[in-house]
Image 1 (tube, rainbow, N blue to C red):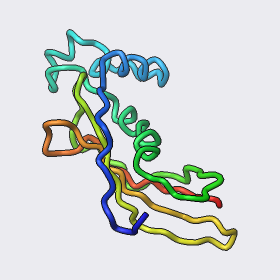
Image 2: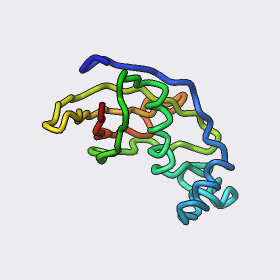
Image 3: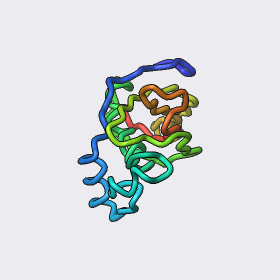
Image 4: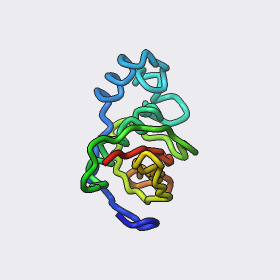
Amino acid sequence: MALGRDYGPTDWIQLSQNRIDEFARTTLDRQWIHVDVEKAERGPFGATIAHGFLTLSLVPHFLSRLRRIEGVSMGINYGLDRVRFPAPAREDSRVRASMVIMTVERKSDGSVHIVTRVTIDLENSEKPCCVADLVSRLYF
C-alpha cells in the first residue's frame, strides 16, 4: 500500500429499501425520510434515502476489498475524522468506494497508526454520498 495512491473503486452495492428498513430497525432511527415510502415520495428527495450512517457502516466491507496489508494480526477502529455526507443516497441507488492512504505512523508498541480517506461514490452523481477519514491501528 502506497501513501497517497488511490485504490479502487470496489464493486457496486445496491441500497435497497429492505436494507434501509433493516438498518432503521437495528439503529432505532425510523425517521420518515428513510422508511415511509409514500411520504418520502412527496418529500424533498422524491424517495426514501439511506441513512448517512448506513453508508458509513459499509466502510469495513469496502476496505476489506481495497486494503490488503501483509502480516497484520489485528486491526482496530481508532475513530473517524471529517465525516461528511455531501449527497443523499436514494432508495435503490448503488454505491461503491475508493480509498487513499493519507498518513502512516509507526508507534512505540510496534503498531501502525494509519489514516485512510474513504470516498463512497453514488452512481450517476457528481457528488459522493459519504467521505470519511478512517483512523485505524494495525498490529503485526
